[in-house]
Length: 295
Ligand code: GDP
Image (spheres, helix red, strand yellow):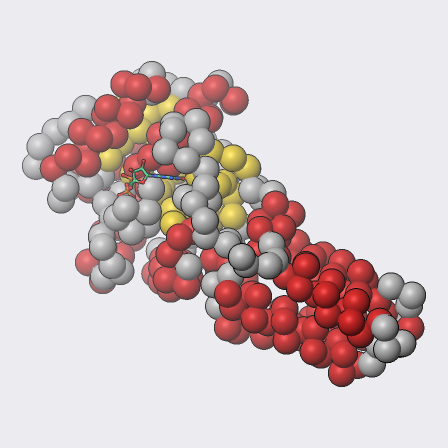
């Protein structure tokens, strides 16, 4: 069975300790384990390198080597550094004039539509917001219908479906309806694609320009590992994201995608999708993901 990093490091330091004081080389050997473990957890290579360099500096700088329990201290530094790099979670920013537009972007199958409804439900139940949801996906005929069904299940209003309108026209109509009918928040669920393409990015950028969203949330599947980083980089460069919703955290992914996306985009992970059920959405706690990455 896979042994977590904490256990592996414990074993190494136990062996070393029998020999007496730790040397800098001993710490380097332990850090090689850290490097392997992070790569196994699907953390992107540049992020792994940065992480290991930071831990090494802290471990040596803090005179860990002379302490009685150097192993424990190195493990603590690894954990603390990971938590710091993962950053704090953050609430959905609704600091704008109502109706506040929230744009949901991401690849098809990432959990975007489900997350749209999950967030709407959370805003409704926890913050008593009046939320309107609109699907801007005109390519998949079932997409607008899917959001409507989720709206019916959760008691959240969805924009009426008008065939033939393009995404920008639907987004404008959603905002107008939001204004006229006194909604607090308008959630805009954009179309996904199987892979990143220029047309998708141009469409999302046009919707962004037409609605000036307070949040542009990238929905990314934790199970896709390193691909999630490419997706996040692309959306951030071309559309500009304000936060990340990481889905399928209930699966067996080790969570390295969270660390890479946060480091590479600099944008906070705001929420975690923890299941298929509509209430399976949780705030992001860095220590939980750190524990998962370290095993
Ligand atoms: P979209 O194409 O990005 O809009 O993806 P959907 O919202 O339609 O989700 C695709 C599938 O993933 C659906 O079967 C969802 O129930 C499922 N799904 C979404 N989020 C999660 C999650 O956090 N955990 C799990 N296990 N399944 C999820």
